[in-house]
Length: 96
Image (cartoon, rainbow, N blue to C red; front, side, top):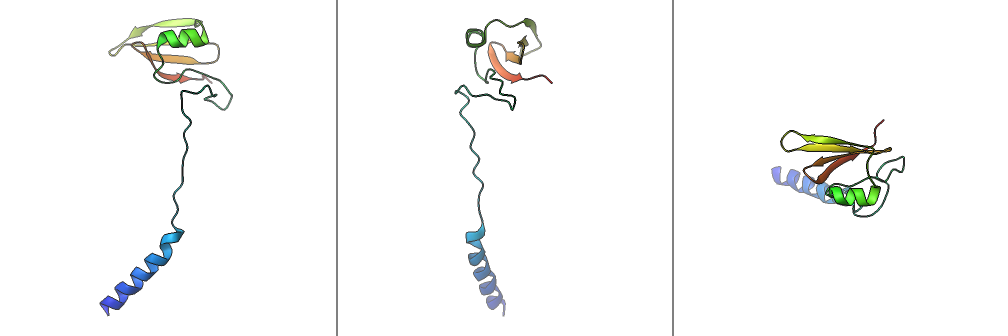
């Protein structure tokens, strides 16, 4: 009786296997110049250096000095704010 139940369960699992699906999520390569917000604001991506940010986006309106350990600083642009750890971008945000 137990073996019949196992056979039935195995058969049902084999029949259900083709119904299982996986969702594929594609994440754009951050090295490309694509807008990274719904508003279409192009902003620096993680890993860029301060020199690269300045070359690509110009001088910021305001720079704050680094604080803490590791030292975190930020640059304010008209449409976004860039946060740096040492000399490298760790995040950029569009303020509300």
